[in-house]
Image (cartoon, rainbow, N blue to C red; front, top):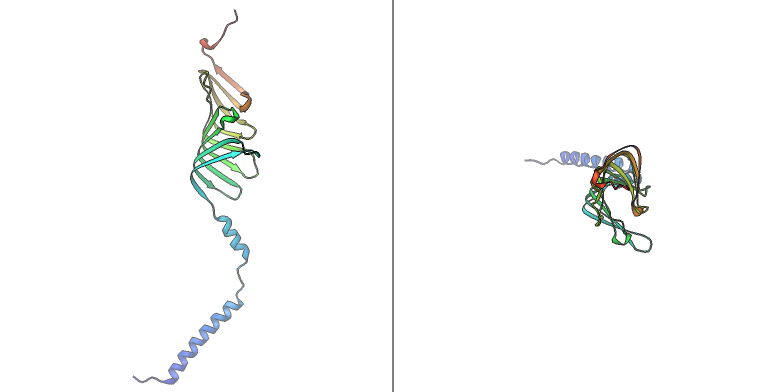
Length: 194
């Protein structure tokens, strides 16, 4: 087989033109702005399993603990917790334990929104425990306030109350029902002054 110099020069010049075109295209093409890289970084989110958050005040005193089976960052502003338990420290003398299917915390808010099978239980050792159940509850663990505008069912010493809306101050053991209050009380729990 005979190799012709002219054929090799044609092949070589085609390869040079292709490389030259590619280089010119790279120089002329605009660079991607750095902003795109920052947007991509913001899309990265974190996930965590078996999470325990221990919250303290400025002096380091334990305020409350939030336990969650799973935590997910939904955006740079919102974190969602799943299968949640919030309990106060023994030093706080607050006996309430709150549980829910999920809790949402917005960066700009001091409170959590608990949703799905929400219950707040008073672990009183002297009498039967009190239980509050609802489908959504707002809790501010630092101020010990719990509130909702939804229907609540409350069991206190085997007496049952239901209402629409509630405000509770856990560290003062105060409970205010807002409207549509209904209840049933067992006779054995009613004390007569006669």
